[in-house]
Amino acid sequence: MNLNAPRGTQDLLPGVTEKWQYIENALKELCTNYHYKEIRTPIFEHTELFQRGVGDTTDIVQREMYTFTDRGDRSITLRPEGTASVVRAFVQNKLFGSPNQPTKLFYVGPMFRYERPQQGRMRQFVQFGVEALGSADPAIDAEVLALAMNCYQSFGLKSLKLVINSLGDKESRNRHREALIQHFTPHKEELCSDCQTRLEKNPLRVLDCKKDRNHPAMETAPSILEYLNPESKAYFEAVQQHLTNMGISFIVDPNLVRGLDYYNHTAFEIMSDAEGFGAITTLSGGGRYNGLVEELGGPETPGIGFALSVERLLMAIEAEGIELPLDDTLDCYIITMGERANQEAVSIQYKLRQAGIQVDKDYLDKKPKAQWKAADRLQAKFAIVLGDDELDRSVVAVKDLSTGEQEEIDYQKLESYIKSALQGGK
Image 1 (cartoon, one colour):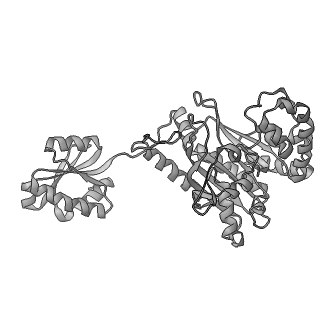
Image 2 (image 1 turned 30 degrees about the horizontal axis):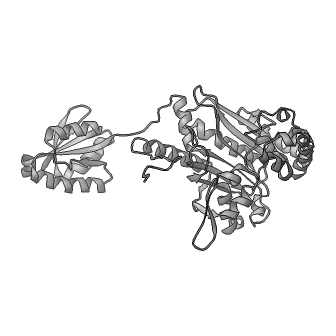
Image 3 (image 1 turned 180 degrees about the vertical axis):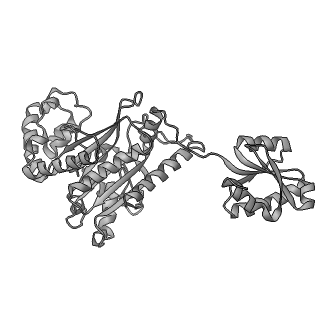
């Protein structure tokens, strides 16, 4: 019997969860500044959603999804990514009918992919993502890219590289598709079985193959940039100009291909150049997906978005030696002497908590000396000392543990005294 956490999952314990809370809250606040609203979708969806939305030629759909049949004989899949679910919700709830367009959304939550666990890649991982639906303006592409970069810069990360490419519109992609087929067909038998299938269904996926990445034909494959029509070129140039105007540095990489079938026009990745970060340098990625809303049953609606792994964000923060400004202190710790005091402490603690003050006390019947040590370990700002003498006089002793100063405070004034002291005055 194996009762440990399943391979590719992890327990986030106190001392670590505070980092996650800080990061998630900071990302949500940043999205609010960009006027994006939070959306929460189910953790599992009908399998067809990902087959149609992500693409049946992708590694995710072919081999990485957690899929099962429920009691109603329906094929259900734990979500492997967030965009398809968000677009499904956009269509199902008719958000396209809102007068406030584009619809700007963000999400954060667990995703599931069956892949080989390694540092920064888990089978259950937390993904934060952004989707902007309803605008085909190159400026919204630039906004999403800027927001993605800000997600890392806001934590003080500096070893960042933004890589962009254009996958073009449908006409450009069709021309490029034919060129790729002609290029790779003479080498078809040399490619892996997956790529042999992809060559017919979606040859762009061949460029993203992990097995054949070092094949000589990859280096000489035709670039999408050579097949962009005038409209696609102008769009890509406009995105680049917006980024330049914002002072955001970027690199154009014509070989950049995102791992999902729904992308077109702008595609991008953010990478870490930090020493010791690891062999897999990609932090996040995304791009434009005009056509996905229609594919999932909605009206013609352009869209763009990105997603990042919180696990890999934490890795980047660690690689650059950044300390998150976490507050792990305790406002007050109640130290009691005697059973009467211990009984009264329960009431005092409750009242202070009701007032929004963070308080704790001993529950293991420790001696006063051990309680003082506990207050120190918990980094309490103040100790509230209560014994028989204080009870008889309806007072408590309050000690500032940073200065050592101690005062006797009337019961009725304790709440206001602590609040004032925490704010820097008494």
